[in-house]
Image 1 (cartoon, rainbow, N blue to C red):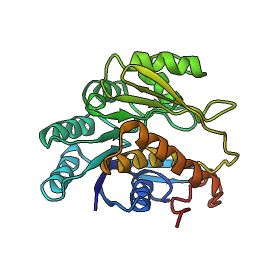
Image 2: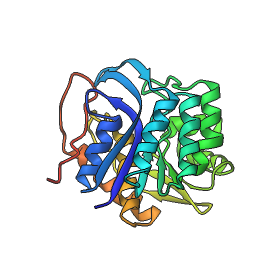
Image 3: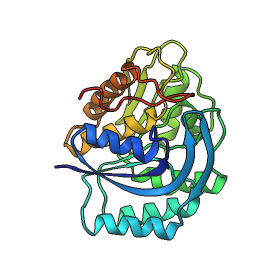
Length: 259
């Protein structure tokens, strides 16, 4: 049984965050564990409030995990302030964590920045360099590269800029492209496009969380980075195509469509 750890925020409605990560880990028949960074009051219509854990308590959760059940892979999602980011980076280095996937949750669906300048700098300087792969969407890639990212050429330029500060692979997801769902994988200083069809389903709450968790599950099972992503993309596409329809807003995926 492979052991997977999600370090992220909680979504009380179950569509994203820790809840989506655990569902994904379960779908991959792995053992899921969590370190909660924030509690959110949210549903398919949006986020109404956030309560962050203290950095000290985040650190204690990490100690509890690594002292007992060492994870085979780690997914990191919502890390909302500098203190939380710093303690996570410190503990990951202390415990020599492996197979780290970071989904840099920096921009809301409406385009609002979710991090202040100090947190952004700490994320870029201390946490992202520890990742084996990061999975920003186009909006997040724009923040990380300090440029507009509106098309495939922009995605390639952004990946090159981001690669100057991190050694791991960079996956810029193309879900916001107008006519495709092609993703850019920048690995070993080379660009590789993974083609994908646009799925006509507005219910995509938790797609980024699910994709990064699926990649982590595959890495934990020993797959290469590229194969981990390709298989995870297939899983995510199937979960969207299943057309689960819950809630009054942008609904969640069916993580268990294969069962």
